[in-house]
Length: 139
Image 1 (spheres, rainbow, N blue to C red):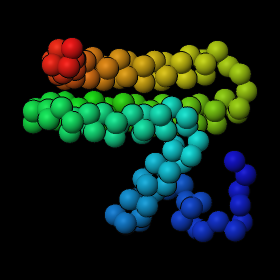
Image 2: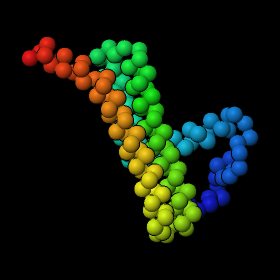
Image 3: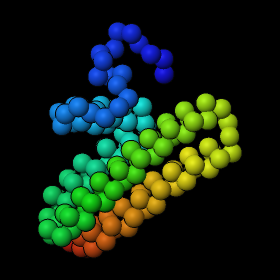
Image 4: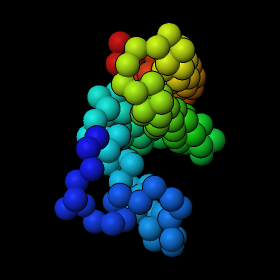
């Protein structure tokens, strides 16, 4: 990215946040950047409320809500870390191909894959018995 002289000073700052409010500002800006630029992050952000609506529909137990919430957060966390690692690797590699950069990015993407698989397994554990039971009632 090129420097934009019209940017606010706080948008160009590299160091630590000067206040808690500024920390939250930077964090929400990071979420906005991920949502605006990362297709898979947007997909997960759409899947999360769908899973929550399914939880409401099937009236899942409190422990299942905890498992569902943690699964959603784990996947979103992995996506955000993957994005951060990709940016740092791109900067370090000077936006050129390096085998080590590819391995770092592939490994970060694999972390998202593992988190997603774990979330699917949790979703199956939570929802499959309820879906099967509902299908038997209507069948």
